[in-house]
Image (cartoon, rainbow, N blue to C red; front, side, top):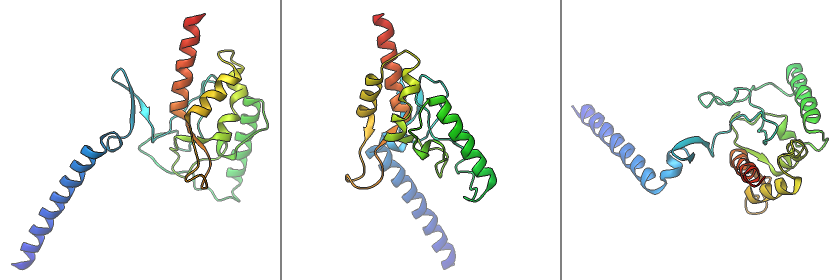
Length: 186
């Protein structure tokens, strides 16, 4: 009989804990607990937490993803560093990057996958290495692109740890807005 009582109490406490934690997170951190979605006119454009692919040369590109940014699959290829497949893939990505961006300034983050395959950020250096390609479209100048990168970049943690980073979706939305403003003034 006591095992039934313990089971019932365990189930009740679990339900209470679950309801309480979900309620508190929704009340105190509504934006974050609902996926940090970026919306415009009621339409969801993406999430600040999950990367997405951008292939248009007028915009910044994200890191490679072995799962093509499908948010229901998380993880990288898990190929070991000595894998011929990984070496071939990395070489191919490097060649594609240098020919597409017409630069040798390269941050390895742009040719290697993140651990999750869904990283929404690139490093500051990765953003700078794409300026030549974006400005060559003629839609904006290098100085305007650098200004946008500066405005959207986030500093290192405590000024010491990690790299300065940029959220690609936020940066591309600012770039899109800049393009729209410039086209209206022409």
